Amino acid sequence: MKLIDTDILIDLFHRNKAALTLINTLVASEDQLAISVVTLTELLSGMRPGEEMLTEELLLLFDIVPIDEAIGRQASAYLRTFRRSHRIDFGDALIAATAFLYGAELFTRNVKHYPMSDIVVTLPYERGG
Image (cartoon, rainbow, N blue to C red; front, side, top):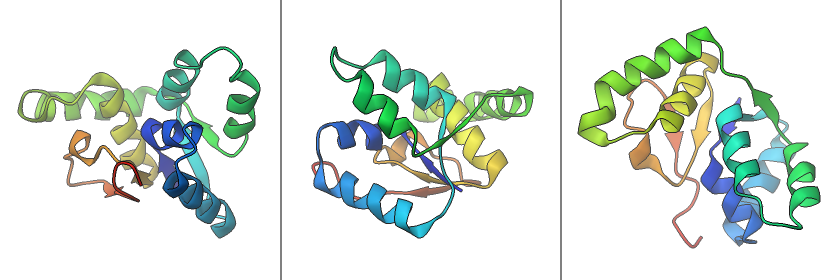
């Protein structure tokens, strides 16, 4: 499973070529593509007027992984460990826990938000791509 972080989807909306290439490559690979329900929430809450149809079409590419008790417990452990040292927030802890429990590779530009050594974090391109 490839878990896509919110920043990559935002780049897609801004027509970032690197983000477009990444998503096209991942779709062509036939790997399971997913987003956390956290990413869904962030994406929908940040929509501008007129972006509804494009957003819904984009979401069709991904399985949406819900938050359950196991994810909540793992996220809590990450927050206890990394909140002070790395200032990770609640949403990032939930996304990291999702990656951990599903054995997913997490694609993000915000690698500093994910200091956990027990998940695979991939920086697919630099900012501005």
